[in-house]
Length: 389
Ligand code: UD1
Picture 1 (cartoon, rainbow, N blue to C red):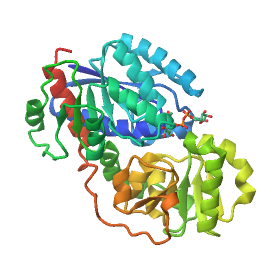
Picture 2: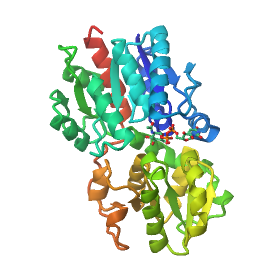
Picture 3: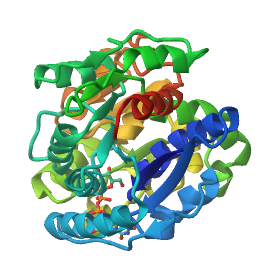
């Protein structure tokens, strides 16, 4: 049996993990007890609406380890994660550790694992904003450097890694049918050199989840009724990144942009705790009809996005979700890692916004076919079978 530890800590990671968990469950049903799956929650996010709500609505089991790291400066938080994850990994002794995205939980875990000589599997590898002032950009670069299996969501991500010197690249964007997948993938992964990282374009696990969740959200979510909203009568806004919320000049620019372009419009704003703290001073300066609400779970957020006229966000995940839902998005940042969404016209950086922007169907399949997590699990199996870990 292959022992895998998954480490999550922040909101988007619960969603990404859910996709992989489904694939692990499916794999274990077909090939009994292939994986012993252990979940660690670092505790980076801890409020009910930032964490537990996702476990409840997605049906994710309680983590085996809850490390209770909590908030702190980047150094403090990452250091706590390194220390506490190390203890959990020493006890659980996995074959591989799966980390997701680009948060401090991702970085801390990758450092702990690699120093214990445990292979790191990075899901959502290869993204680059080319802005090292972003904590997430630094996290991604460092995590990719110490990972052994680098699962990319897109060809762009593979290209980024290739230009950083990664050479062992499989599946240059070609999709392989999953029938007999094990056979196919076994042939592809030959980890003869244990130090050699393998880069694979599998598609985006968030797309896997979205495809399955939209119908469920439609049935279960009552957010539109709760907020008394009609479809297409409102805009949706989210801001949470430190590079936005902790930079007064940037925040001023963003508010001025919304004031200029959305006068008197109804805007729904689910507030991450970070922005809640700083937004008080802006409340009397707004030209639009804003409704502040608490952070939302995944299903409610999908429903709001699906029914909004347009999304404004600094979130990475939501840019793609808008793209998949064919909802126009304005990204409230100076650059984005998700360049395909911009090329298609569904997404635009706020500095480039013109009231008429024309979405196309270009790139619609650039993030895979909704089977990224099945591929990931299958590749891990074939890697572990071939490698003397
Ligand atoms: C983190 C990730 C970011 C991701 C985001 C998703 C890093 C560097 N950033 O940012 O990439 O997009 O999660 O939401 O890891 N807080 C609470 N309750 C909570 C969690 C946080 O009140 O449950 C408050 C605290 O004041 C904390 C602040 O929010 O200081 C920021 O939280 P933190 O975990 O540092 O990072 P995020 O901004 O959420």
